[in-house]
Length: 237
Image (cartoon, rainbow, N blue to C red; front, side, top):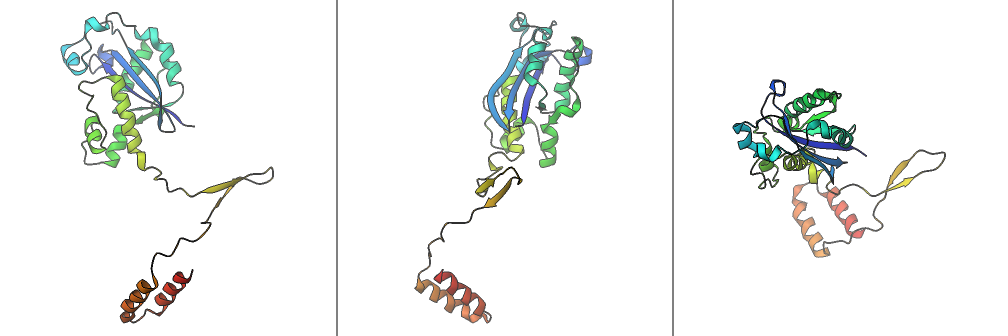
C-alpha cells in the first residue's frame, strides 16, 4: 500500500527567509494513486500584514486571517497527517521552502528533499515543449479546473492530485487488459501465477461462401497455399 500526500500552500509573498509566511495549507491523501477523501486543510494567521499583490492572488485578507490559528498551533496535527508519506507538489521547491521555514521557526525538523515528488519536473519530462503550469496541464489532460477562479491550497491540491494521477497514466494505466490468473500457494512452494486460456473457442464468424471468395481472391498472389491451408483449418476449428 503506497501512501502519498498531494499538497499546496498559499503565502504572503515569495520569500520565506525575508519574512513571508504561509497562510493556507491544503493536503490530499492518496493510497495507491486513489484519493481516499482524507484531507488536511487549515488557514493560518501569518502574524503580519497581507500585501495587496498576494491578496489579489488568493483573496485571503488580514481580517479573514486574524482569528485563525498560528502555524505553531497546528504543527502537531500537520506532521501527524503527513506522517512519513511521500509529498507531491507542483513547483515543489517553492512550497517546501515555505513549509521548512515554518517548521524551523517552531523548532521542528525540516522535510527532507528526498520525500518530495515535483509534478512540474514530471510534466517537463513528459511535455518538454510546455507550457506546464497547473492550468495548462489541466487543459492538456482534460481536467476540469473551472472552480479555480482564485488560488486556494486545498482546491489546488485536489486538482493537482488529478493531474498527478494522469501524468502517471491515469485512467489508461491498466486499460483492463490484465490476464486472469490463479494464484497457487503452499507451505513448500513460492507464489506463482497460471494464465488461464479460453474455456471454448470463439464461434466462426465467416460463412463457407465468405471463405471460398477469400481463397479465390488470394489465389492470384502466387504463394497462397499455406494461407489457404490455415484458413481451412480455422474454419474447421
